[in-house]
Length: 167
Image (cartoon, rainbow, N blue to C red):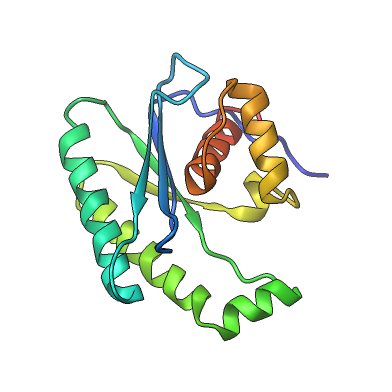
């Protein structure tokens, strides 16, 4: 029997790491008093190769934390942990080194979070969204929030809704 997630009652930030050139890392800030995120942001991974894209995302993440930690009281930062899935898509991802690149970025985001007064906590993909695909996550987030969010930001919002016990 799967236990229902206990709702988080403090302010928190969620992070969905990614460094793709056409996407990136999604972040969503949640207040303890509101269902919808107070702030969302897409950190884009621009650059000529994956390591420079990761550096760019990390720079934007650190800048966001520096500028917004004083504006918003944060307690915990929930970061989606990369995970290998033994599926055809998972095998292709692993063989193309995409999983390694994602784990690298995740580790750097985790490290940057440790250098703040906030507490990093990992969130397993299987826990927050189970078997839902991108389209199902997007539809569920839009139904709850009344707003459509793009790729990685949508996942960051979905993680937050899960943590609030609404997903």
